[in-house]
Length: 264
Image 1: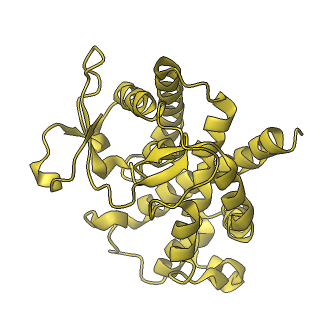
Image 2: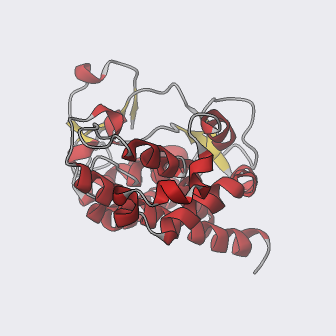
Image 3: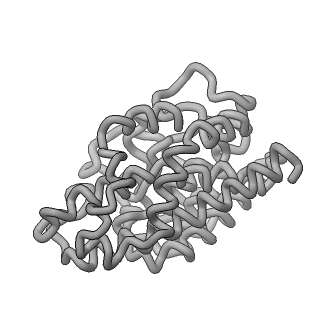
């Protein structure tokens, strides 16, 4: 995996937003190979600004969390049509339990991570056969120590792809990463790696109050990350589908944390 900090327009190769599931798997394997030998213990350490604690603290005042309890906001036609009780419960619990999620995050084995490994920061042709298959990662401004698997949580959650792809990308990314770790000689337990991946669900709870706040003036509102204006109903439907998957990730994280840390 190539580490670089050029401008996005200067990087050659296929952007991750156009990768196939097989390419996601291959890229994840490269991450596993690179990170497998970089274990740094069980705490986040002093280096890096991309920790989960810093991320959640950063978002604490940027959205109106009171909207989660505002029944009137949830009766807005767009919200009522697409955002169900599962999504509301996910955001409420993730926000309320963020301290527990951070505790689990910091207790996991850590490695050197990109911490912003989403589709706009990865390029290449990772389907190329052989160990030299190139993947270029740009924008290392959030790099630091984080749990094994956490970069894969960012990679699998591609908000610029159809929500229907989430399950496939989730499976391909996790499988590829575990394969890469094993090939690197790492002895990380897969369920702890999986926990590091799904704990990232807590990062995205802010999307719920953010999207609800946009509902009043939603038509013509651009999609997230500065994409061209999208069909509003499609945008809400897509966000809802992803948020329900994140709710499942959050539940999976709780179950795995019980098994990993409490023997339940």
